[in-house]
Length: 177
Length: 163
Image (cartoon, rainbow over all chains, first blue to last red; front, side, top):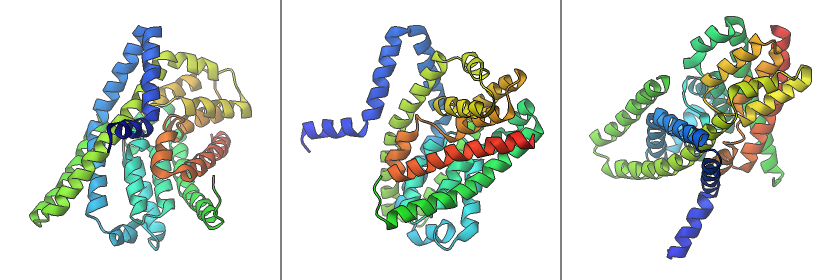
């Protein structure tokens, strides 16, 4: 590749990130003190999640190069039925860190034949955050937290089926969004 | 702390998977897997750091008190919409949303408003939508998020009725 092409592809790939950095620079000039704390917080956040980020990358690479399509399909693909949905819900509610850390992993799972509804259920049930439930109970009370999390779980499962239904019918009708 | 512990467990699990490959002397797959992982690690790290940066800046330029006070102006159905809107813009770890929810409760906000705020805090992020778009596609991102926006309104109404 020519040098210009490499620069062009980097600009295209990371357009959003470059815009964010520009905003950050403007904010630093505008209010250095607050911006400093913001950047410090970002680094802190990143440090906190670095193990998860590394693990997700390694797991995604492993699934992409080593695990067969058949294996993925068996557990969370077509024919896995409600068992697959449950696997997705349990995985999503136990994980920590934001769901978007795992987006490359989900992409690889779909490539390997995972069902859309399992992935949607997993992403939505991320909101449950099982490791933080005790903290939430202390602050917001048991009743609120129980109903809140049950509703999320229910919605995660239902929305999985609805999203899959809509995406499949869009695909059938060849609708472009 | 939870993040580090879960991260460590997850990492240990993945390392065992890779070690298993080595014991089977499958060096080619091992190499391919690690190579792909490194590529993903670099790409994901850049993207995530940019997101963390914008979240960090947002949190410092919009204080929690200001957000809470703003939300306390609303009630009823408009409260749900306001909670949903603010929750979608603001992002951060789920754990830092709970104290804001407590502040709202202590100051007499309705259950539906607090639910809408908390639910969209963890489920919807305007800032992470470009990531979802890049990895999972435009249709997936649009359908999932629109459905979630509607779902949050319904869930908030149910919460109000239940509590």
